[in-house]
Amino acid sequence: MNHVLCGLAANVSLPSELVDRLIAIADEEIAADLAHRADLGHAQAVALASRVEESAARLAYAGRLTAADIDPVTQPDAALALLAERAGHPDWGRLFAEDPDAERRERLAGCPGLPADVVETLAADSDVRVVAELASWTTPELATRLATHPHAEVRRTVAANEATPSAVLAALLTGEGLPPARRCLVCDREEVPFAHDPQCPRLDCDLPSGASCDGSHESARHDTQLMAIRNPATPTEAVVGFVDHPSLLLRWALAGRPDLPSQVRARLAADAHAGVRADLAENPAIDESLIRALSTDGDHEVRRRLAHNPQVPLDVLTQLVGTTRIGATLLPRIASASPDEAEKLARSPNPAARMLLARRRDLPPALRDALAADSDAKVVKSIAPHPGLSESQLRTMLDRHGVQVAAQVAANPDATATLLEDLVRHRPTARKALREIAGHPHATAPALLACLADPRARPLAAAHAALPPPIIEQLLTDADWRVAEAAAANPSLPHAVMSDLLSRR
Image (cartoon, rainbow, N blue to C red; front, side):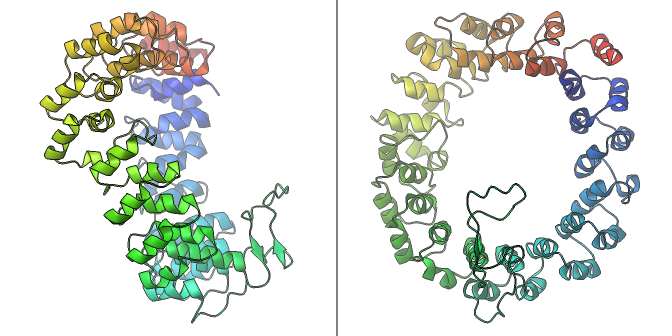
């Protein structure tokens, strides 16, 4: 891979005539970057698709090509991409429905808006993968028909289709009212009884781990039940009976549903597996009493997921963050806090509560400024990137808390060029701050030159438009390919150098 030319292909300042020259020598990697250019003209897109076959589908998905630009016989991937975007010719569906390549027929089956005769042809396809793909999104009428398909894999994808009628989904859960399936993916390939070894050494084997069939297609039936429980269109009364099912996966899927009766949720809250309880804890449909009960769960992940529940009471949330690692994220309940609630959080004697609020980026100036002056470094660290803070406030944060908040100060969108230059000279060096400075729009050449000394900040600095052109040119030959590619993509790279790079090729 020529990383410099790939970077050049992504350079927003590359003149149109040099784009043409690059298209003429493009390989698959260069074409991938060219295809994402916002200024790529239609004629250039056609030329690129002709030059690199693999880019045609990407360009078609991006809307850069039309049906008139594509020959479905010589460019089938691009034609299928246009069909997937409802931009292909209707006759292409009939062509691909008879294609000997089953993978193409399967891709066709995933395309919306196909003519009725094409859909019927695909529904009768001899390859189960084609029919299963069609079943995963098709209409209620055809889903009802395919629920009786002799192959269990088709029934599994019908169970995942939200357009499948609720009565059919209920029948797929139990099998009642449906003729038994005659085949599954396991007995298609193996003599039954067969249980797939989770550590299967065969490189050509694509059976799922643990797949099994004793003649009753048990793993396929289990997977169909799993899809139906996950499907929001499946009636509540059809799924509640799985609350005590011996299959962990089925109980786990049940825990995420928003429509469960309170007694079923209570049973799931007592499940022996923490994963079930964790999914339940994040479910926004659980009530306050259950939230409070789960807040004392002994498993860290259950409590962490509960903190992300948008309905968690603020007092429970502040209690949770004192005992649970939440991460540097804005929690949904904090994002939706009312002005009065935000005021209370800002005045809370608990620094964890103030820290949660400080992660918002839409605070009124009075609250923002109060948190910026907080005595707790974790609170200041959270508020430091908030827009609207003055240079004086940011410098006060640094003076009080030093390297603990340096990276967050550098990430502030209003950090001045002078402040960023001072930050690169801060001792001890805050390496995370260098990475923020290297991508900051206010970074100056002196600050960026300092960032080049850090291996992780170096690629970011190499791409920064404020870097002096002679330095950018030097970085084109850097030993780190990421740096060289970033330098080639730098919009301040002189056009003469761009042209020279192509001439060398």
